[in-house]
Each structure stands twice: as C-alpha cells, then as structure tokens.
View 1 (cartoon, one colour):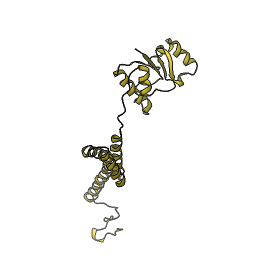
View 2: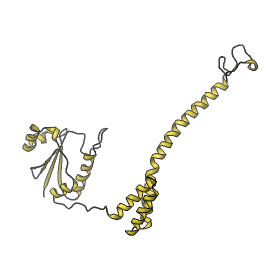
View 3: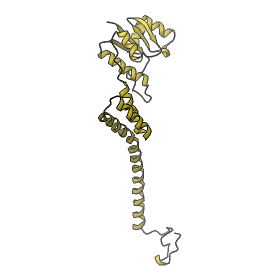
View 4: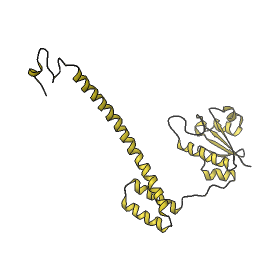
Length: 211
C-alpha cells in the first residue's frame, strides 16, 4: 500500500484548531486525512515542534530544510519520494496518491435548489423563494424537504437576532436595576444638599427646586 508522510510546520497539533487564529486550510486537511485513513490510506504526520528528530533523520526532509527552510513547510512524501511542498493537497489529490476512490459529490441540482431556498429565507427575498420553489418542484423535490430547508434557514437566521436581543436585555436589565437602587436610596435617606429635596435648614414645603 502507498505510504504518505506529511511533515508539518511547527504547531500545537495537526487539527488546526489550536490557538487564537484558526487556519481553515489545516482544519480542512485534517478532516481529509481522517477520511482517507478511514478509507484505508496509510498516512503519517510529523510536527516539527514535537518530532524534530524525524525531520533530521529523513535525508529528503533534512535537505529541504537546509534549502527553502521550514517556512516552506509542509512537505509531503509519497512512498519516500517528494510529492508536494508549501501547501496541503486537496482531498482528490490525497485520494489519488493513496489509491482510494474519493467520495462522489452530493451537490446535485436538487440540493442546490434547497440551498437557494434557504438563502431566500435568510435574505427575505420573495421573488427568490418563488423562483427556486418552482425550480425545485420541477426537479422533483417534495414539500417536506423544502420545509426542512426553510426551517433550518429560519433557525440560522434567528440565532444572531436572539443573541443581540439577549445582549440588549443584559445591558438594559442591569441599568434598570441600578436605576431602581438609586431611586430607593434617594427616597430612604433624606438629602441635605440635593437639587430636588429640602436644603439645609429648609422645610420641605419651602424648599427651592430646580426641577
């Protein structure tokens, strides 16, 4: 079986989700590697930060580091021979190296229309919905699947709305609580120098008021 070796640059782990800045390319490739392994591919990954000796012991990798340097990683070897450097392969390329069949695309015309219906709901576009509803019907998509697309789109659409309403509630409820505390404090303790209460030596009935 074909052996694929991936020599990654120095990073926390091979998933790509470590740290503050997530590199989507690394995340996607990690998913492709998992898929390929489950399909029978023989893949090894080496991290420069954690396995520097593996880099030094491989003559191709060692020579590569002395030339372009670690800035040009990742480096990929297929059956011990140079295959790619400076980037990660696509799932199709990985499958071709490993000799496995890549998964067929599920993005059919019917799926495309369901996506378009969801987008129409998210953007409040009536003409878009009517058009893609008709197209979906012509392609044999039933109302139940379109309803699922609409419901899912609505849930996604409502999420940011709920988040900002929750934020507003937290701010306004907090300010309302502070205002209530201030009112209680003002009414329970007579003010001697307040602008609306009696001043020093003045009766409440004769106090001058500014408001």
